[in-house]
Length: 245
Image 1 (cartoon, helix red, strand yellow):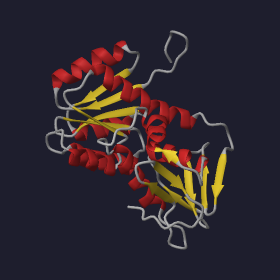
Image 2: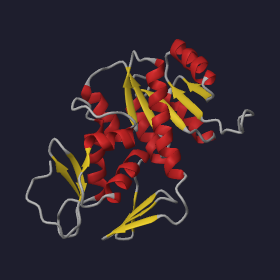
Image 3: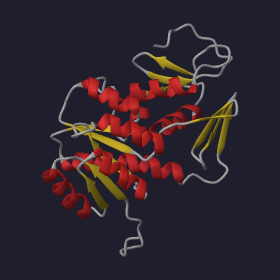
């Protein structure tokens, strides 16, 4: 706990082989009230992650010995800790790969420290808000059950593993099931930033969520894409003809 006001200190683990960048991030993030740890290799970062609980991980893609994508796969096999990926590459393919593996957000180097801080706070806010839900707050829709207390989702009684972003997206969608929710609203409420057509983050997260949930027993998709408008979580009896990509 922080001595000032009893606020909880959020602990960040940075996995990046850039020694100078780690030093800069340490000074900046500690000045913003965060606890800080750094590892220069993926294997070292995984050991630290296994040794104590961190609130969020900043993970570089270009690491020696083992790249960030492989490290992220290992992290996701043991933890749902929020992960923000860093990369010197501006290639959209790298961004999509990171998000598909399970990253919560992605930012390219060089970046503004204030932008990184805003992204970190948005990811932490999503995680913290979900954990602060009141007890026994459950939504049931057909064969799906979402419990905000335990951050768990079941389909026909079987557990479905979701990242924090995917859980927040599903929470938003089923809260207004049968109604359109705009891409802008989802992006602001879940990703913490406005929506642009050039940013594929939202569509990638939706695609992963759709894949994990699977279709209804009658073969229909649960999440309908409304082209150039947004998305809708549909009821199994709803009839529609528009194709969902």
